[in-house]
Length: 296
Image (cartoon, rainbow, N blue to C red; front, side, top):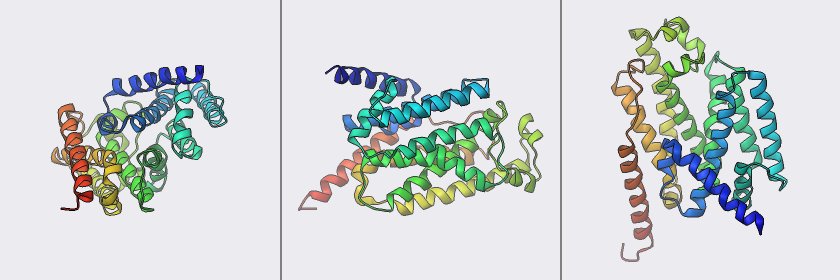
């Protein structure tokens, strides 16, 4: 059928879009079985395309118009009428994995917040953003990975928030250049810092204390995710654990730099990401073998 042929091309499109990015996500999914890997690449491409609508449109009105069109395309996809390469691939994914459409709508809503909300008065508002921009992605991913424990959804939600808060810490300077400040306004004021200081890249004791507070919050979510992780599902969820370990290493590097995110952009080398991914994958295979080995 023609649809089958076009779906192969669509997966090539989504795989290329993901591979070209070389993000932390890419290294987390390298060792998945092909069917799941292609599904994850499709989800990543959907996320990236949504994000690009917001970031590459200088006119907020046009960006909102395109997001509305993208929402309609998502609905059409779930009604078996996709017309975009990404949603053609997504349609195939939705037939193989139980991904609720509402998760993808939440994701679009999260990206739209970057158009409507340049500041966050308190963590309550920021936590909503973290859920929509990151936790929802985790919820989608676990439907592809597979899981047995009901706690896995809470694991995905907590891990997503930990990752997003780590990104926010790393990207303070980069976000300020596009007039976005994700650190809650009440906390900036509480620690005697200011928006003006952020825009000028002022690295001071007040900034360090402010960032220590952000780091402590992120640590709570990392810890919560680890507590909720179901080890018996490690052969299924190892990509999520690769992501957690890559991001936790990034988190540690931010702390080790004493939160100086103004001087240099803190990152993890591709070689290090690959080592983490390979070690976790091998560990998942070993655990699976020993689990089913009567002699173990």
